[in-house]
Image 1 (cartoon, rainbow, N blue to C red):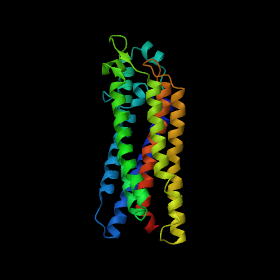
Image 2: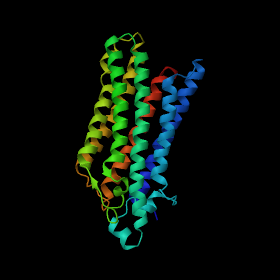
Image 3: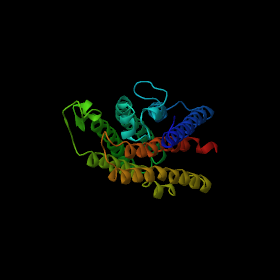
Length: 274
């Protein structure tokens, strides 16, 4: 049956993905009420929420379509799987980790780009910020590509990620690689959610609207915190086909970050209706 860790991961993933979906629907409802044709950033966040559900599915469904990823090793000790003759479940879970890394990168890359495009419109009177936002967009795209490339290239051949018994190959320093992903992720979050705060007071809007906008960016700081926690956990994670516990803990935090980013992105559009 489901392990406690597997059940917890599935519940958190589904709940936050659902909230993100509701936020996207609210975003388009706000566009409709204001008679505004959906913009590029709106469609980017739609792509983000779709890919985010792909990530959620990756936490629920295994590589070989078993009923639940928790039946394929999530939260189960590797030694117990091998002893039970279920090495194929271990292989499924290791493949799943690669798929999750790719969907995580794409979802966050799309959403961060969407947020930055929205911020350019909100703070369009600040030329310096527009330049910073453009640079940040390139930065986020490069981060997403970095994350995807590491998933596929950290071990050669690719199959060495899940089969180091029957295959010969090599892996790079996984800890350094994944810490670099986390650090760059946190830096981009700080650019997105922290740098605009001092500029809010200079916007021509009511004080209540300024406070609401500040509150939205404060919520965005949760993604910064999630990134910091994930990066700290990576430093203590043993990346090995014989150890699933560490990577599984990271899945929980990784499932929250894109969803919260989507919610923040949509609140920037929904705020005038609240």
